[in-house]
Length: 390
Image 1: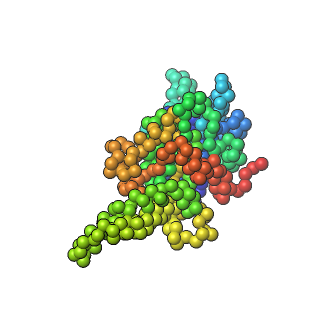
Image 2: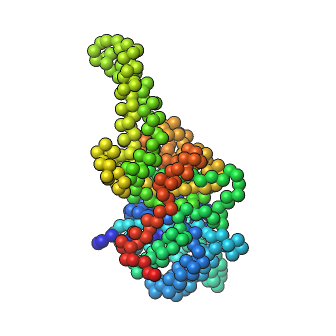
């Protein structure tokens, strides 16, 4: 069976209640599908109207369910009727065999039941004694069939640039405070070795910050991007490792040859070998993030899309930089507090689960390098379902 591309729309209510991580983690671990795309949207009224029309005419759904979902979309996806501000929706793309059916089964029926599905856990379906719906929150919206998936993704792809990307104004994103900041988080490649719940679990921990996700992107960093992104780290490594290299090398020489290494020779080792070790550590970081070892990557190939993927998220809110870094924990996972991202999921200083910007200035620089506003949804949709409808 050939691969399919399936989608999950994480509803505004689910996002506002910080359930995004739980939803992503369960879909990835339960379906075994690969996460290949993610984009934040702030749907316009026209996108909402067109999407409601697609759902409302979906013959794969029962008439009652079609009406219920179309009404829900009009009410909960549309801009706030009081302020005119738009709501946040996250589009997730999963790829693999029989992806559409797997996502549909994992999401569960619209009329919820036994507690086994995403909707059983994160949604609500409440009726009165006359079986009239009093409250309805389906948590996520997914495709009912390959045909519906194609139509939906073509529609959202058409609005990918105008309604998606880095959300600057949304109903629950308050930029009025002087302490309002943006910060970048990269959920690193070690979390994507196989489909699992770790990326979602990391997002779940970061939700304790009370911050808002305003951009998301599945990113494959090129060597060129990685060298620029981690560029400030290189001189730090070169300088930081000098003393350690000098001490360890001197001890090895003394032990092997039973001689005493003079301070002047130790200083020569520090100044000449230390930077080489720092450069190699830098190269290993680039290889870890991109899947390519820089010294063996020709200059003309450095701009190519990398082999390894990460999930880039932009968080926004008061004191965003400090709040995220506190939840992430120190660079060395062994020194991080229990419950922090790096203590829970990190292995060592390099394979430490996630990166976060260390200042407002660096956040701006890093967001620019990763290009979080770039629309990667449309190329994926066109690969599977052809060109967008005009």
